[in-house]
Amino acid sequence: RKSRYESVEEERNARREILCEQMMVFRSKLPVLLKHLSAIKDPRSPGKIKYHITVLMIYGILSFVFQMASRREANREMTYPVFVENLKKFFPELYVDGLPHNDTLKRILDRIDVDGIESSLMASVRSLIRKKKFNRYLINKRYPIAVDGTQKCVSDNLWSEHCLERDVGKGDDTRMQYYVYVVEASLAFAGGMTIPLMSEFLSYPQGDNGSTKQDCETKGFKRMAERLKKEFSHLPIMLLLDGLYPNGPILEVCCKNKWDYMIVLQDNSLPSVWEEYEGLKKLEDKNRVSTTWGDRRQNYTWINGIEYSFGKNGRKRQIINLVVCEERWKEVSKDSAQIVSKMSRHAWISGEPLNRWNLHERCNLAARHRWNIESGILIEKRHGYHYEHLFSYNWNAMRGYHYLMRIGHFINVLALYSERLSKTIRDLTMSGFIRFVRSTISGPWLDHLWVKRRLEAPFQLRLI
Image 1 (spheres, helix red, strand yellow):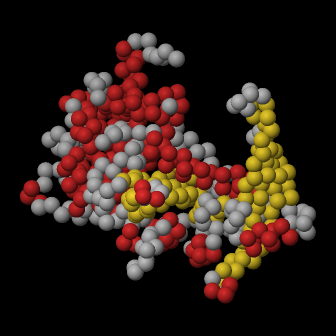
Image 2 (tube, helix red, strand yellow):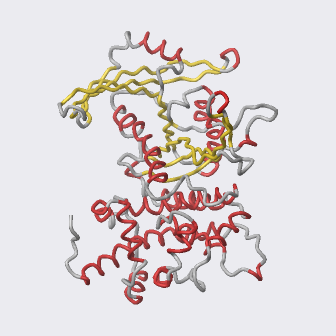
Image 3 (cartoon, one colour):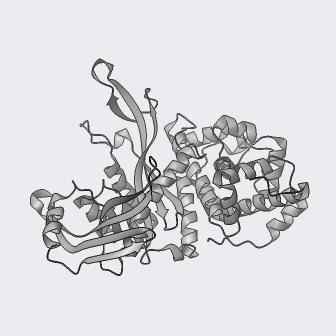
């Protein structure tokens, strides 16, 4: 549709309001970010420092908030005089003589402990949890955290000893390929809100010594589980995992940490559990429910208390609760434009016993939203955050840029679900909103006194 604005003044007011709301969302998290970013040890000589480490980190986060595609684009777009002058209006306490060159940020990321950047993200999420911002989205009073692995980049050149490797091609065309793989964890709430939380990079040196076995997603998950328990030791968590994870050691980790879970169970996984399920479902006639969810007719069957043995000689045991959902719906065929019937089947193992009263919450509002993390990773790869772009061929700096990207995405997710901006973003779409904000801060639309008054006014982040 055509622009809704009928005059320059109307457009100016709208641009001011939208940009200011976006920056206020960022500023609401600034105290926590600055506290933890300033704790990162700066290896530079104090007498030669022009830009404090917090200024460099905030500059890096903003480059991802505005979805700069590369260091070169950030240098070009963010150093225009109008852009710098407008940024100064919103962050007067951080402003120094101009903005740094992105190579300056890259050099500091080469040398610092970049885990401190990720710690600032987790601290920001903790502050929202303490303020009970997510209470309406909880599942059985637990925070649903989805975990999934994804490839970050691939190359024919070994640019770092940390890269994983694999053979590609056939016969005489076989060659070695090197890649970076990351296990991601995000809060995955019903309704689509996905909050980036933690990343675990797989690394070749983490593999078995004296063996050709490399680091893998399962090992990465176990390391992430230790960190997750340390960072959120008292948080009631429900893990949402895909079909790679239903095995004894993973269930043991969840049990040890007192985490609930909903894990996809594939047809070829845990055959002894499936055998027990098929035998018991004929006897448990009461464990069946038919219901309607949206336009889908769902038939649930579940069995609680299945004993699963694993480990050496089957000495270890876990109790498994298994639910299977078969659903039918109708939709328009893409080929013939005719209405056709569709059917799907889903199976999950649950950390808590199942009954007719908790099926909808655990299956439809929790387990199905494991897809949130895959959608979030797709957004980071294809919708402006350039997940697969390394920004540096130094392993430490590459990780640093990755964590800055996740914080930038986190800020934009809060804007997307903020009460004041949600309608605007629905109208513009998220990518259109970012373009609108970028064009506003790059142009002479702002008045210094107007911005100053808005910054001095109280602000409370409210999520829809």
